[in-house]
Amino acid sequence: WEYIMADKKLHITQVRSGIGRPEPHRRNLRALGIRRHQQSVIHDDSPAIRGMIRKISHLISVEEIEG
Image (cartoon, rainbow, N blue to C red; front, side, top):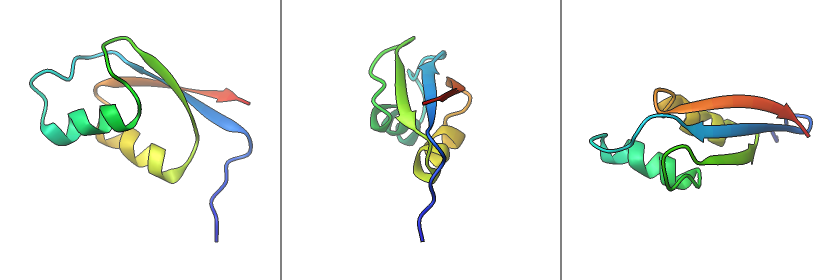
């Protein structure tokens, strides 16, 4: 079985620094493709991405976009 969101994407921006944060938090930032403060990336909506977002929600800002 497969989980698919209908053409939904997530616009993720780092708004707080990863300095001094636990290593798993910094690894989640890198796994999302975020390398520096205030950088934004766009990902397809999926349970894996949502899980990463949940772990570092205090460091990022997320917006849902169509398309």
